[in-house]
Image (cartoon, rainbow, N blue to C red; front, side, top):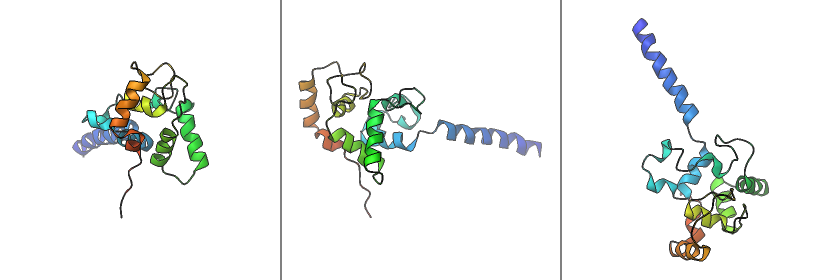
Length: 149
């Protein structure tokens, strides 16, 4: 019986830690939809692939949201039956610059900077990035993936 208890305790701790460390579904969806998973084979375990500050003010997520996160919230409010992927795509397709740094949100996503933080912006000229972005499909590359039946 003591051997069973010794085995159950580590398993229980592992299960608890796994649920605590799991990425929220919105973040998992965004990482895959935006192609951030392609450069890191261990992306599910890395907070570096797309940190919470992509949409939130704090590094741990939760309220408050930055201006990009607020744009997503407004998208959900306007279209409450939409999927997260569709709302994300609509915000990017709107070609807005939520943080006002001179780079549209979709370009910041492409350049892997934070669209909700004016201090985080690409270090390359906008025209150059727009040309590269268009060459790889532009914002259409960020369309939500539809599941077939």
